[in-house]
Length: 230
Image (cartoon, rainbow, N blue to C red; front, side, top):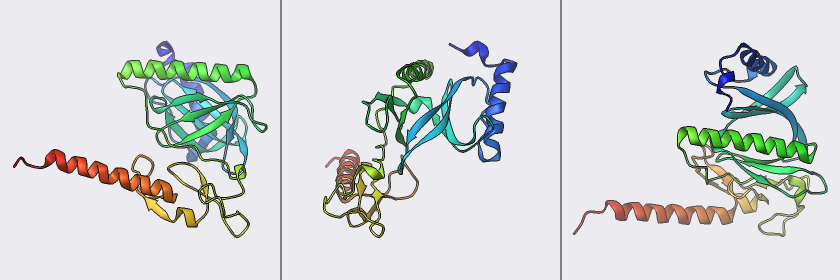
C-alpha cells in the first residue's frame, strides 16, 4: 500500500516533525516500516465538552493529542494500534455533526469532522490501513471494545438509580464498564479489568454484579475443566 514510502527521507522528516511538536512529553514515533499518511484536526467528545484534538494517521497507529500551538506544540499524546480499532458511523446531534466512534479494547470515544466529505476520507483511510494490517498479521478484527463515556452534560440525574440529582456537592462519576454517568452511591464498587487497567476501576452496582457473575461462571468452568475423573 505505502511500503515504498517507509524508508524515504521525506517520510522520516515528517515523522521527526511530529515528534518535535510533542517534545519530551511524547513517545518516539520513528520505527522501521512506519509511514505517516496524514493529519488533521477533529473534534473529540470529551467528558466535559467537545474539544479540538490533533490526529495523525500512520500505517500502523493512530496518534492524537491536545493542541497547545497548532503545527508547533502538542501534548497529552495518545497512541492507538490500528489493529485494535473498529469504527462506527453515528448520526448527527444538535451539538456535533459528521460523527463517528473510534472503538478499541482500552478506550472508545466519539469524534466529528468539519464536513461529511472529511469524515468519509478519514474513515476510508482508517479502514484501508486496518484491513492491510489484519491481512499482514493474520489477526481477526477486534470484538471486545471499551464502552465510551457518556458526557457529563447528557444527564442531570444518575443513570442507574434515576433519583439522585447532580449538583456542586453531588459529583458525577463514570462506570468504567458501561460508561454511564452515575452517583457515588451507585458506584461504590471497584473491579479489576486487566484489559483496561492493572488497578481495580470504579463500576456501577449493576455492572459489578454482572462482572462478579461472569467471574464466578468462568471460575466454575475452569474448575470443571481441570477436575480429575472419578
